[in-house]
Amino acid sequence: MLLIHKTELGKLYQSDCMDLLRSIEGESVHTFFADPPFNLGKDYGTNGSDDRSETAYLEWSKQWLYEAVRILVPGGSFFVYNLPKWLMPVGCYLSSLGGLTFKHW
Image 1 (tube, rainbow, N blue to C red):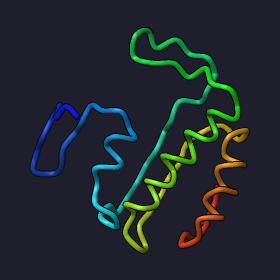
Image 2 (tube, rainbow, N blue to C red; image 1 turned 180 degrees about the vertical axis):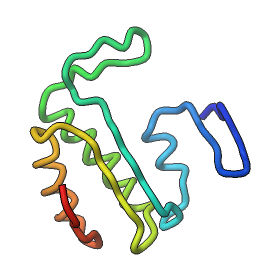
Image 3 (cartoon, rainbow, N blue to C red; image 1 turned 30 degrees about the horizontal axis):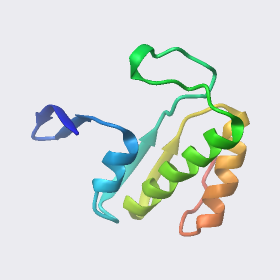
Image 4 (cartoon, helix red, strand yellow; image 1 turned 90 degrees about the vertical axis):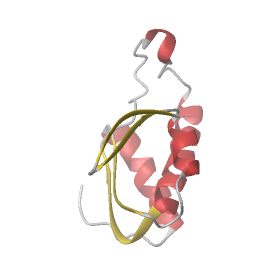
């Protein structure tokens, strides 16, 4: 992980999301906002790709979603921005984890 910026309000890191999420203590984050790649085949150059099979994309999504829920404090807020195509299975997966209260789209 590379620390990019730091203030009294927080820190900004450049890292693979899974490495960063796994390094965070459980139940320590009050608000989690995610705007993941939409798996539309966008070319990110040497920084990655979002051209995965549907199965691979959903499996990757489940991994980071699991970690996001793990680090969220009870009663914390969880926001996910994505396309309806992906949000439908994401919502089902999050419901299966338990411990979250769905509010609205």
